[in-house]
Length: 138
Picture: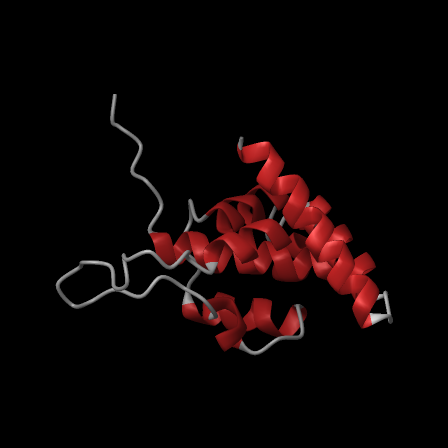
């Protein structure tokens, strides 16, 4: 039996951005699959990074999801020609933001938060969440 190869970090990132955008539009995997002439399982594999998305397919997806192709690469892990990842220092990867936004909780929280007009109230909510999170670490 062959060992499963881990998805390429860029393929995984692009897939998670496809998922995030699809969810932002309230579109199901099935609906996206229908628009692409694919099954929802194939869309699922794209979103997990298990299957690599070809250039023409990515262009098709960008048209359906109404974003430029570059959207899918925003915050992608960059690599040197040597194959070593850049910036492996202390800075957290922007991938955690897109991973969070790709969840239904993350998306719902973000949409609700953005509907709050009072900037001071938004700041107080952020402070509250940070206090709760710091207690969780203890």
